[in-house]
Length: 133
Image 1 (cartoon, rainbow, N blue to C red):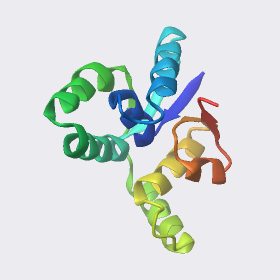
Image 2: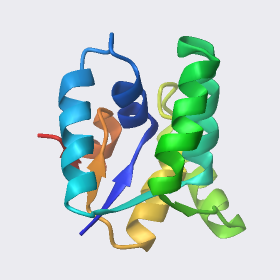
Image 3: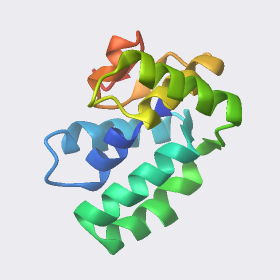
């Protein structure tokens, strides 16, 4: 099985004060044990690094970079995926919907991945199955 992982999941795993931390930690451990293919993009990694550094500090960035990132299959966003994401963002015209999310939708669809580890309602709105339930 493959699951796409969003920034919201990484933040919840790393931040013990996050409302979703316990659910995220338990789900993370489960998908690691099941040898699920963990997919994300370089855009999600960039967004996660910036938010983790700002909110949690450099030690959390180190944990993310050293312990989490090596377990991931990282898809490098190409020009077409980027353009499609920008088009989707502009068409949606929603302030709280990010380019990273729109590109993530495109990549997950391109790879036929229907499950997303996230705590972001935008993925549900796009028809993805969000885990943990």
